[in-house]
Amino acid sequence: MSNQLDSAMMYKLITLASTALSLLSNVSPAENNYNANLSDGAVRNTIGRSQIARNQLNIFRVVAMGDKNPKAFISVSDIYNDTLAIPSTYVNNQKNISFDKLKYFELQTAYRKKLLKGMLLKETDTVFMYDYKLNQLTKTPVIRLKAVAHLTPYADKGEQITIWDYMIGFEIGDKLLRKSGSNYYENLLVYIGSNNPFLPGKMQLVKWKEINKKQFPISNHNTLTKGDKEAYYSFSGGSVIYYIKDILTDGTITERDFIAISTKDKVVLKNEKFTNSEGSSIAPLNFVAGNKEENQWAGYLFKNKPGVIFGFEYHSFGCPSIIVLNKASGNIAINCDNRH
Image (cartoon, rainbow, N blue to C red; front, side, top):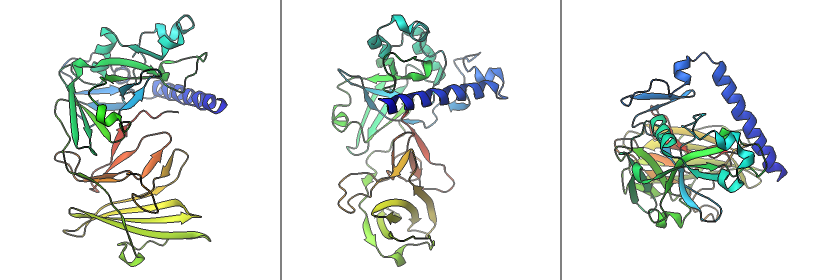
């Protein structure tokens, strides 16, 4: 419990500091207060110091929230961080409200409208939920979903609660995601907007095979210490060959080099390096060294976009990204609201 309290306190200090820095920045008041003078036809909106564009490719996760009867929930708080996102009574009058009522409540009309306006969404927009393992697309209109607030699991009863302890988003009905829910929504990605961005049936589970050092396409000279070993793997998928070089220290993967090369013109599409850190660790490769987990997936996930691959890291806090196989394109962050 003490570690949990320490983590919660650290999170609050960080968020309060972030708020203070935002207020002291040189950004104009009109930019910091994104609710000011925002017309219904606005194309771009500013929340804090991050921008949202209408129909921008923001990808979200689904998680199960709730103690007694968990519900599928999409948090949008990585993007939507309005200081007035919920009624002030839940913070200002918290000592007179039961903890159960503080933990979860529906956002009524005014706060629902504020959420939609802040996210540049409309009631007529659609929530597209794609399970790439099942190749199953589920969609539902925004207007059919509850807008809700969940207290982060790291907030304990009796602690002082702030607005930053709440996860704001949409609740999904039990029947919509029954199949994906049986796997804890692990392979489910979400987009909210007017058009479906997902390309069905083009993702595949990566099956690595071991190769020798000479087959690795780039020479890089890592300094190995006693006990270190190198391991090399590849996978061919469509017009791309994916290569991996792992460095293991006492049997644990400590570094990983990833390279994707086009089979058509031998151009390097992407080159990434992974290391372990406080918030992330390198995920095992599929079907290597007895690993039965299905971590890496590759193929075409989005319409009119380059190929992608993901699943190389575990995150204890922070969120993973989808690697886009094009050096000119940035990777796509997954908004998962994974806070500590």
